[in-house]
Image (cartoon, rainbow, N blue to C red; front, side, top):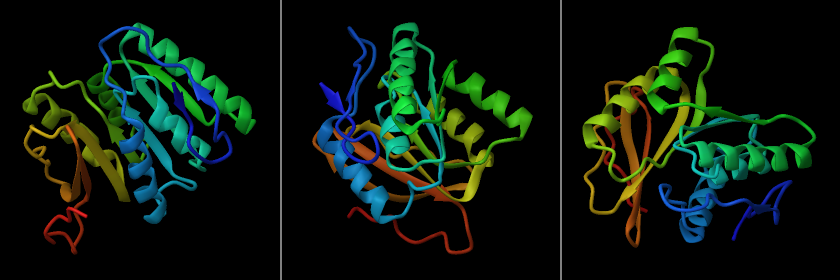
Amino acid sequence: MTRIVAGAAGGSTLVSVPGEGTRPTTDRVKEALFSRLESMNMLADTRVLDLYAGSGSLGAESASRGAKSVELVEFNDKAAAVCQLNADLVNKVLGSKVVRVQRSKVESFLARTAEAALEQWDLVFMDPPYPLTEAELSLVLELLAPQLSHFAVVIVERSARTPEPTWPAGLTGLAHKKYGETRLWFAEPVTEAAGVEPSTD
């Protein structure tokens, strides 16, 4: 059972994706992640993009904690349907359509938003399936990088056994943290201050 941890919809039970094919973020990782984001002031009034959204729990948690808008991008039919149920639940509590669902391949979605040139994301979650190759992940990051706000944070969740993502021009590694078999990689847009060694705290 997955619940929203905190915020306006805190305690609400989310629908889980049936069967296999998705890999939900564990409660331990989720709580640690959102504690860190709260300390970074990266939730209130931010524009959130949840790629490979699964059940949409990360995006739903962000909305509950004050995100201005949340896009859940999921290609799997069953998972996209669950995303919609969870989006409807959170939107009802908030009294506003903060969370939206896009049934789309991630690459196709990012290509469309790049062409429209309308979005600048402040916070991006990426929890791609493990079979996704490093080259495929690099392509997605390359499409994403020009669409980020200058203070954005990107979080990539991968197996602890996989290497650091290859950050494209425009993105630099910020920090990483290992939780059992999971590692979170944090990145930010390149600025004049970039080049500091990534933190493992």
